[in-house]
Amino acid sequence: MIPRQFIRASAPVFRRNAFNAPRVSALRFYSNFKAEEQPRIRIGSTAPNFQADTTQGKIDFHEFIGNNWVVLFSHPADFTPVCTTELGAFAKLAPEFKERGVKMIGLSTEGVESHNDWIKDIEEVATDGAKFGYPIIADASKEVAFKYDMVTEEDFANINSGMVATVRSVFIIDPAKKVRLIMTYPASTGRNSAEVLRVIDALQLADSKGIATPIDWSVGEDVIIPPSVSNEDAKAKFGEFNELKSYLRTTKSPID
Image 1 (cartoon, one colour):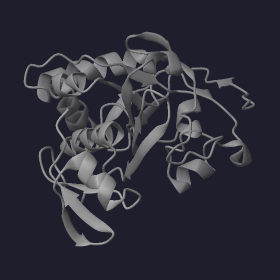
Image 2: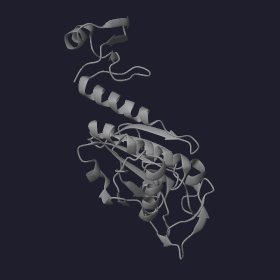
Image 3: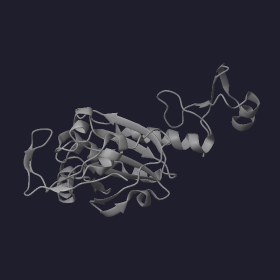
Image 4: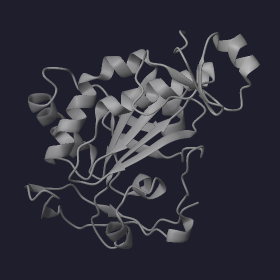
């Protein structure tokens, strides 16, 4: 259990965000966290659970995952330019994620009211008319940012003493609640939404067909037969294949 000591600010905090846009932030709650108690998240780790307010109500994260794949991605702050383009792009791709059985959920260390105001901007400038349909976590206490190590080295050192911004982290989590992929981007660099979809396609195909995918793979292209599969078993399972090396064999992409 992570010890938490909350200190409530006595008044709204007037500040500029990470991109120098002046605005009024909500009341802040700060938490004291110990570095030695931070979970170590690796590929294959169980995604840490948490309860939080979101723009679509309170959630228990493991209950939110249910039997779905989930993309959890964080943002440095509300009303920041790069994040606005990212959230809009993911909103436009909602049908693609739904088709793959994937739920999306964002996060920023602001409150729900601020998130809702930000969503209005996102729908105005970044979704091409698409409705913003997925929740954004209100992580003002930074509990989730701490559990998922979503802060820079400098901000982690200051996490107990004031406002910190999350970095652009992406976690792909499977229905067993295992972390399957982690990507982290600096604040200045926008993510590639197509890459997130590509990785989900690759992970789901690998799980269902027992294959691996090569560099720059996309749906329909040849896949790799794992070295653990013998040639005899590979022929029985996949039919014809191309043996470039004893450890590198490719075959047509299996069809679901």
